[in-house]
Image (cartoon, rainbow, N blue to C red):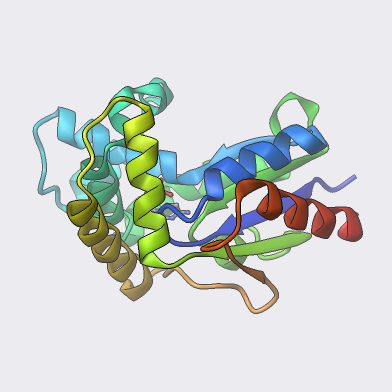
Length: 213
Ligand code: C5P
């Protein structure tokens, strides 16, 4: 039958990835981190020494995206995220990554019965018919603190003030752009995770999916 799609959108560092991975594991669904695609485009440009790409340069990088790059340790750097949000505001870059995402939702890999897909525009643009849509939010303070902890756990340096500023800049750019801005779909469940642990967020999301199946 039609794959069961769980769309998870929300701002930077709201906990989308952790939740998406847990849900995919629990239901045997495939998982696609669409932010990693934009980060991959950004990283390929950064590695080529192009930190101020035109739309056409960024689009070429998107069309030639080497999926092996999505495993590069620099993919998670805040600098890569910042550059990702700049190329993600370019309509032709989004169009270049569109087909790959839609194909994943139509035919999830490895014969999975469904997919969990996270990003900014999954419930609104990529999978408007997703059976379950979640929109995760959290205060800037909670998200910055989480990002600092994530970086520290990886043994990387983390400055709370700088990360707070970067998250705010990225949110403003993602929500303010003309094409596929960050926003909750009308039929999305809003989940504020500021004061919730991952177990509570997971349990809430899991029961929403069970109800919808
Ligand atoms: O989710 P993550 O922080 O890895 O995403 C990096 C950037 O990629 C975001 O700030 C956003 O600008 C962009 N993005 C997007 N649409 C998506 C996923 C990510 O515009 N579906």
